[in-house]
Image (cartoon, rainbow, N blue to C red):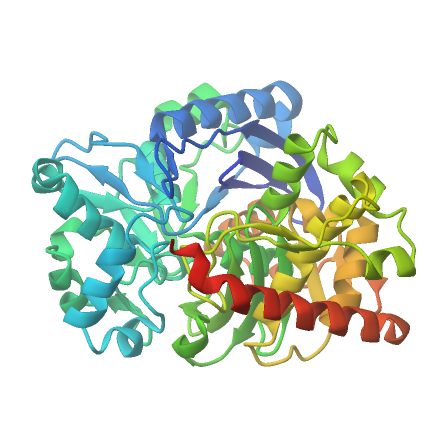
Amino acid sequence: MYLGLDLGTSELKALLLADDHRIVGTAGARLTLSRPQPLWAEQAPAQWAQALEAVMAQMRAQHALALAQVRALGLSGQMHGAVLLDAADEVLRPAILWNDGRSAAQCAQLTQAMPSLAQITGNLAMPGFTAPKLLWVKAHEPALFARTARVLLPKDWLRLLLSGEAVSEMSDAAGTLWLDVARRDWSDAMLAATGLTRAHMPRLVEGSAVSAWLRPALAQRWGVGTAHGRPVAIAGGGGDNAASAVGMGVVQPGQGFVSLGTSGVIFIAGARFEPRPQQAVHAFCHALPGRWHQMSVMLSAASAVRWAAQTLGFGDEAALLGQAATLDAAQRERAPLFLPYLSGERSPHNDPQAQGVLFGLTQAHGAAHIAYAVVEGVSLGLRDGLDTLARPADALALVGGGARSAWWAQLLADILEVPLTLAEGGEAGGALGAARLAWLADGGDEAAVCAPPRVRQRFEARDTRAGLHRARHARFQALYGALRSQFAG
């Protein structure tokens, strides 16, 4: 039995996986986001600790026998967040998250200071990454920066809590701008450019390797692994998208997935480090040894739908999607356009100043038209990202909370013009991949552990819809181009 923990932005999830691939149980605890100033996004790590206790209490109450059989656990989580610790490993300030846009000036500073940045890291300097956040702290909170003894990523702070060990792994570390991604090692030059050294960094392991061991006191309190009486290994794990890829069996070159989580991601696995920073494509290490991946990222995906549902009085996302689905083809053609840049944007624009826009409203439009526009806008943003990547070898797996809607899945397949598959465990995302990485750390065979889950449903791209969606996509792109200069003002 294996346990996966996935520290997302809106929820911490736990998943128990049997060695016959059955998902035995899941649990979740909601998280809240703080935006104390425009462009800021923060969370208190103490909230993560509370969520961890909550999900483990749920697991023990509902699946005590299975929990006692756990041999290893794995970690997945939101990438890029900066958790600053002092010499006693006490948290110095709220974590600055992946969707925080405050450090645009520091990105320019880092790019100027390090002309080889893109070649070393495989990426452009963007406010979402970790290194510019530390430059911002250095500039605006210098006393706190001086006290910083260690910087951890969110899931790796959980590992510290679970084991007392400061460790990260390649896929998450690749999103810091401190990793030499081709060499899979910290870059001393990139660290020096932000006033840091290797002493500030956790040690590195591969995602499928043992990184540490669960504290015996926690194992006893939660009832983890008590049936076999051996220490419970903690796998290196993975950043949320790399872990999701492992969960969906996306481990061979050309395989890929699309994620409808808080952010929207298109992920294509590869055998080599192939940076394409000119289009804001991310080139990261995979969570498995000797593999890399390319990824396009939009900052507001299912979170844009959630925002619209709450703001426009739909009640919840399901109600909004239900309204959107009532429109026929002619009504869709006349719907407003929605730019989903509620938190700025990464791929392909690299524009932290980008804003959401609802364009083309008339008195003929009702709630269903607006609902459709929001869902379509997220889907068109994902199409922008797909067009920056090599086309997938076959269908893309569909993962994340947005994958629960068959109607949205079909719309997305039509807009991307790529088949999508919905597999068992697709909604579990990184938690399933984290559990699989734990299985590998316990000696599991990669071919058996990382087999693609059974496909529940396949959504073919419908040629009859292509003309409408291409025309809408062209207008969507033109609208952003026309407004980009206005966002900065």
